[in-house]
Image (cartoon, rainbow, N blue to C red):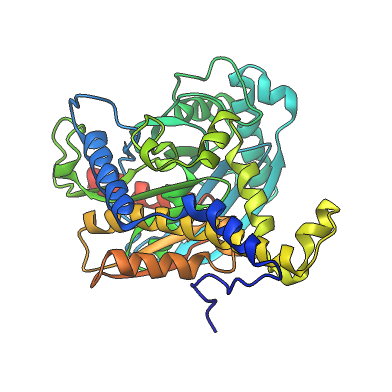
Amino acid sequence: MAPRIEAPEFRLTKTDVVKKVEDILAPLKLSEEVQKRIREVYDEEMRIGLARNPSRKSCLQMENTYLPELPNGTEEGEYLALDLGGTNFRVILLQLEKGRVVSDEVQHYFVPEPLRVGPGSELFDFLAACIYDFLETRSKLDHKLPLGFTFSFPMTQQDLNVGILVSWTKSFNCPGVVGEDAVKMLNEAIQRRGDLEVEVVAVLNDTTGTLVQGAFLDRKCAIGLIIGTGSNACYIERVDRVEKWEGTHGDIKEVVVDIEWGAFGDNGVLDFMKTEYDQMLDKNSLLVGSFTDAVLKLARPVSSESCFHELGIEHGSDDLKILQQVCFAVTERAAILLAICLSATLMRVDREECTIAVDGSLYKYHPRLHHLLEHYIIKMTPGKKFSLLLAEDGSGKGAGLIAAIANRLRTRKHS
């Protein structure tokens, strides 16, 4: 039985409190007029983000990933993936046969603090050493292996295998890397060793990896979505709309565009719909992850009373009912905002039917978000065929699959 998408019934022993709670939560409700305006702003920011010489900068990066196609069922061979996005990273080996994963091996490594803040060359030498360790333990040092590199830091792509670091985040701050190509630095570290037959052929973020993983599971997939400690999406765009991609593109008709919608509204275009709660969060620069973690705690079934117990707060049944209303109001608003952006993106995708690949802790563990999201997308795009598909580990398996695609593109180019 699917969770209900209507707000829980709200009755309290003190009827005057009901009105107070409703008044407090009222600003979180988005009217049809406000939803329409958000949609118009989003469409315009997408257009500006793809323009060659826009009159102003868009808050949506609309990054060209240079990935012109997705898995097609012909993928064969062995491919490596390296997933770096925090203090722990993974090396993955995928074995593909006739477009199927027949085996995958994973090993986790820890990046010590001195390497996270030391010279960039030392960090990449360490990554190369871990690749060596991974392959040596599997007796595959003599195997020629293409590698897909998930580099989960702000970057600007200049090709499928060129990713320029814009800034370090999390606990990383290695000098000599910002403004440089992370792929080039890793390839140079591999070459310095002289004992590896590995080449980095593609760079990506987890959003692109989720789309590729989703397309591997379902060929109708054309949108990748992350709803976790942060949110982002990517989609397949017609090349003729990517005006800022200069030059000729041969027979390339489509390309994956990374929207980077985590910054949507940062330039003030959404100030008209911000509540005092939004402004408080912005003012205090609250980390998205911390906020989402708090929401995740609130999203647990209130019958468990776990939220109050963890906070050491005494409570009654009315408190639980109020908490229930707050949780639903926050969740519904988030679902509507996501649905607005997704419905607009769906209409840009040149597909009769489209699958949206989704990953992220908030999507996976929230008891109502999937159903609310589905409900509002249907409402906003009547008649459009779509489905939401959980596609886990885009940053791992997805990176290996992109390496396979890059290898296929290279073979085709030189044939």
